[in-house]
Length: 74
Picture 1 (cartoon, rainbow, N blue to C red):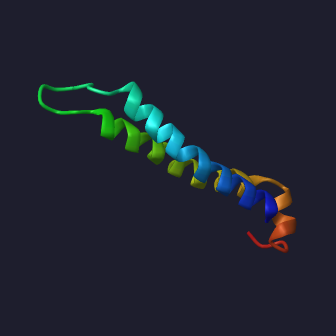
Picture 2 (tube, rainbow, N blue to C red; picture 1 turned 180 degrees about the horizontal axis):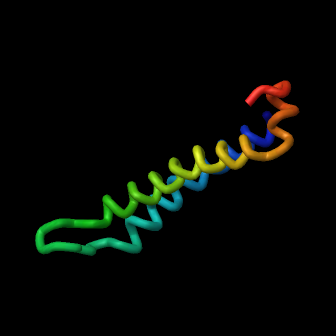
């Protein structure tokens, strides 16, 4: 539980930095004329992080130690 809290708070601290980095890196980028793309890229970075959660939960579920944690139930 402590490790989960540590990772969660760390990601909460890193996310605004990654968001700002994406905004600064793609500032003024226009994929099509008249469409600014920097905000889409910044929110896509956050979305990639959100998609990683279910992937890691699936990996944990497949590990042999998860049977012990769940009391033998899947």
